[in-house]
Amino acid sequence: MSETTTKKTSGLAIAGLVLGILAAVTSFLPIINNLSAIIAVIGGVLAAISLVGALRGKHSSKGLAIAGVVLAVVSFAVVLATQSMYKSIIDTAAQSAKENSSALVQTQAKDSEPTEDKSKKKSDEATAEEQTAPEATQEEAKEEAVEQDYSNLAVGTSVELKDGTKITVNSVQTGLVNYDDSLVACVNVTYENNGDKGASFNPYDWKGEDANGAQRSQSYYSDAENELNSGTLSPGGSVTGNIYFDDGIVRVLYYSNMFNDDPTAGWKL
Image (cartoon, rainbow, N blue to C red; front, side, top):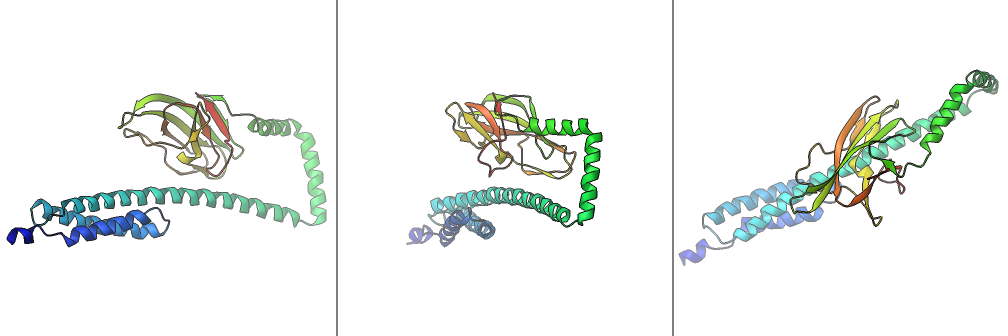
């Protein structure tokens, strides 16, 4: 009778497992996963307490307790990862909206100038254009260079975008062995902001393309160092970091943001 009572199922283990499942199911959902993190912590604590009891022989719910702890830890990690991704998406969208709004205000202000002022301004601009023709030619040549084909650049080559952002693939290291013996390639990149506005950087702006034309986002590498995170560069700022892909890539592609269908530039390995 005493042994049966000692080996009963633990309510804490069951509660921890249920909360872990609930946290795992909702951990991918934006906003809601704030609550998922709290549920995961509570479920993990309950499961851990139950696991201690099981190890001391007070009940027979060791498996349930371990499952609850694992689910809680995984759910909490997923919450952190997805919130970081959502924040990056929101920052990129906000930056784009800010730039579009600024351009619209400037256009409206220009259209609202008096007719006489516009005529005088056009006359002054024409005179200035005659006097600075070499400078205008240089600017046109610079814009034309930005529109060239950058799909098969050599590693070490830089690309300067119209907003002043300079992107460089510095080096590529292949054949890195991951924790599961799969091979990984490390791509080292640099962003430099030579413009007069903030410039965003994000590892999800990059993809690796294999010989079959399949393009994939970054991969997990157990021994990763100096990984590129997401953020914004002030004018004059720069950042360098590593992005890891499954080995076998033949090109590295840069998209000005993750929502673009076509890459802005590509480096051939």
